[in-house]
Image (cartoon, rainbow, N blue to C red):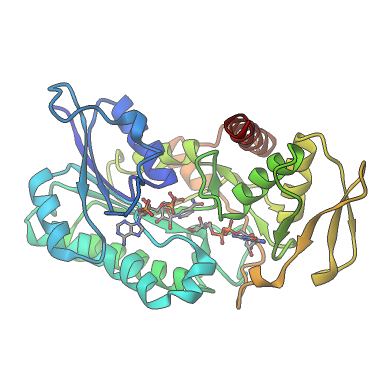
Length: 352
Ligand code: NDP
Ligand code: GDR
């Protein structure tokens, strides 16, 4: 019998890579997508086959983490062996503007899924993966951050994810559910949403290189992140649910880089050297060859409370799951820049 997985957030970056990975493993994959006024399935369109095709193993259901009856119905219909809860309002800065919605979708949404599993009598059958985050560490308590490092959330997003983390642990302990938290550090790819800093940078670098954009406006250039490759990270999610016992794991590369370093590398990949001038809000990046200002700090992108430094310790994942990242930082930046150069070139061709 083929295993059945249900992925919430299937239209997002991780959902797309995970769906592809599970289909490769022979799973039947069901995904929850939101109704939108325009197409929102770009990242998974290549996986979709006609429903009427008997060999189809990929199915989509309309749903929303804020709607419990809908989640109960989908889980009842699908009877999944594994649920991967990836759906979330995942943008930290946006969570300061939509704190209540973020708490509802990211925090209570997780409870809704766990309750659905329990109410439907699936606690002994359905394994549960919760997309927890390095944002839980927030204000630096210990470096590198590991499973035992105290949490100190610094945004409505992180506070909502803190609730989701603990309710997952509670359902594991109270109802003997196979429920795991993957504490994933930032992971990126050419599929990353355009408003997260890495993709915003690689997209702008490509567009500036090809003359489609003049300048890139950014917030805090000093923030440091442990950036990995999303495709490596979805494998770790799956591995967690294949263990004998449920547990929580940090997934990270063990390397950290500043936003400024990411910017320099992305532009270099496009053949542009940057020279930095000024400090703080006055800081600009100048195109060494043309003398033009192509990077500028815009305080609009500062956060009311920032997470300054994230650096994960993935030793437990390596020891227990046998997981380790395969893509290096340089390879990650290179692959994102190349994909965005191809996108920008396509845009030029379409306007010729
Ligand atoms: P994305 O923002 O790319 O995807 C989020 C997904 O959730 C999308 O499919 C989105 O749908 C869906 N979604 C949002 N709100 C709701 C809702 N109310 N009901 C149902 N679906 C909803 O995130 P990522 O793929 O990058 O991340 C996946 C998960 O992992 C998220 O929970 C995120 O918080 C967490 N995470 C991510 C990390 C990262 O570095 N990428 C690191 C650690 C944790 P739509 O397409 O319609 O917007
Ligand atoms: P993050 O990712 O907040 O770590 O959350 P993001 O890429 O948004 O920010 C990383 C760092 O870059 C700084 N920054 C900017 N960020 C954005 N988005 N736009 C800018 O213009 C900009 N300039 C500087 C930020 O201040 C921050 O310090 C991501 C999300 O995927 C979460 O869902 C996930 O939980 C965490 O990673 C781990």
